[in-house]
Length: 322
Image 1 (cartoon, rainbow, N blue to C red):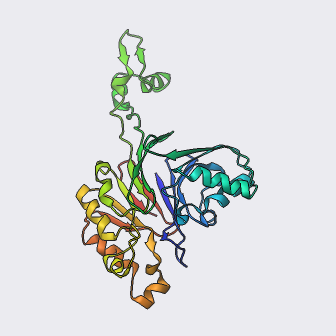
Image 2 (cartoon, rainbow, N blue to C red):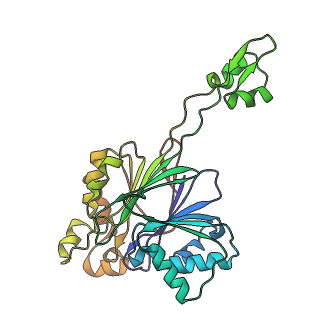
Image 3 (cartoon, helix red, strand yellow):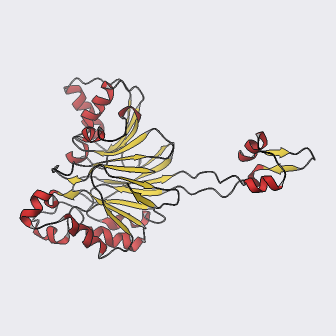
């Protein structure tokens, strides 16, 4: 599983960071998915191997502009690229009206069909070929969601050594056994294919969260989770300087929950522009402050996301930064 961060800034872009967008591609799949689509996401994609015609699903965590203003241009460009495969868009109530209004006013006509699913209390679970995805409500100034992505189980490995012990030559019989079929050998012995297949391989589980004041809301879903991707808009020091409550988390908030759940991997993203190089030099803030605050509470693998950076998660759930 490959995850690429297209934008890691909160609210507005900086010289180093674009606003929110995350690409996800499963192993051995040419299709890919997009989580959030802030302005200029399509520009970021030009710097990656991801192809717009191969984009199959878009998940929007909430309808603040830094998470969805890039949708209109990205979809229009996908059409201009002669993409004709349909695309599914999943997001909060209002996303259908938003898209239809913009396309009607601008007279934008797409070459492909869009299947829009709005999340409400009756519509929270979605199936894609590779995984089951569930939307979890968070606490923010408008409806915001996390997406729990549970990859489907993979069939167990074929027990080649056992087949050899039975004197079965490599060939068509192997194929039947791998499919769990029963096979009769020349000596009359009947073999059950299920005896030659190991235990199913559990799929990977990750959570991609939208803006969220209360990370504790995710605790019931973090069991057996390989990776949590969550905003860390502030440090405690920066939050104390902000007069208004914008319903965001600090690095400490998220790290405490990650430690409680014993999740092995945490990636923080969606950082305030106060941590940009230009701003931080004047105010003496540093993006490293975010990491240090998280590490004070969390003992697992903790990363700060960077624009255009890719993480690979292997079948065991181990994470590698590219």
